[in-house]
Image 1 (cartoon, rainbow, N blue to C red):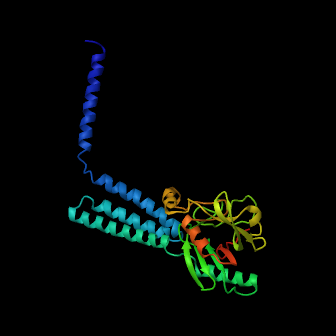
Image 2 (image 1 turned 180 degrees about the horizontal axis):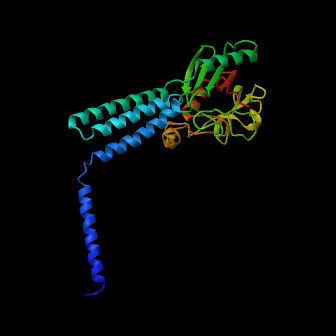
Image 3 (image 1 turned 90 degrees about the horizontal axis):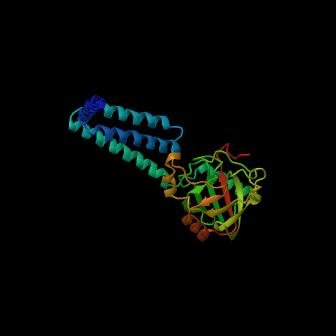
Amino acid sequence: MPAFAGKRQQIFVAAGLASHAGKTQMQVPAVQIPVNHILDIGSKKIVSALVAFFPDHFQIFEMVLHALKRRWRTVRHGNSLMKKNIVFALIIIFLCIAGVLAYFVFAPAVSNDAKSRAYSALAETNGRQPENGTLIIVDFSKPSQTKRLAIIDLEKGGAVFHGRVAHGKNSGLVYASDLSNQMNSLKSSAGLFKVEQLYNGKHGPSYRLEGLDPQLNDNARRRGIIIHAGYYVSLKSILLNWKEKFRLGRSHGCFVLSHEGFRKLRGNLDRPAYLYAYGGRDGDGE
């Protein structure tokens, strides 16, 4: 008998054992793998989104989701009715969380403090509150996925549009927490700006800005800080950036609106026009 015959028999025996082991493992209920896998992936994605919107409360959401996962693992060997009830409860909870997230994504997000600071800055600069014109308020204390921009009709005293606005890439991931007036910083600036003429530049139709606050934004013109539209200010951009807490696209320091938002701005902008960027109570930057 050839010398390799014994080795070939060993290979066949090993293959048979592996095949038998594989058959034994296949007896495990298939439902355990997809459900647990979905819970693991889904919970991570949801926690990531919740961290972006509720940075101070994300531990609570993590605890709830982990408790649900432990509960499922406890009852997965139970009767089918109990499993159905748990799955139904998970679906309801996920839908509720999705509803809360949807509200914060689509609802106006400009805070009352941002509005108050904007009106105060406008009155201080002009000596009184203008009776007409346009005031654009950007609330950088809110996450970028939310509608943190408001266009105010000063004559009517109300908002005519709410939308999303991008911040500078070096100001932060989801929040514009690091604001600056420095050249080449690629950061957003806080304070009051005057909206100057409309022109056609490399980003298409754009508005130049004149910074009115020394030390905060008076380098805006030299830095090339403008208002323009960008494809990366969209829900699609938010979803594509799911690995980075579902952030919105970011700029080089400009105030970038969606194309729809920019059309709304052009259609509702009356002179004199101002933009106020609110950085939070202590977020005016350097």
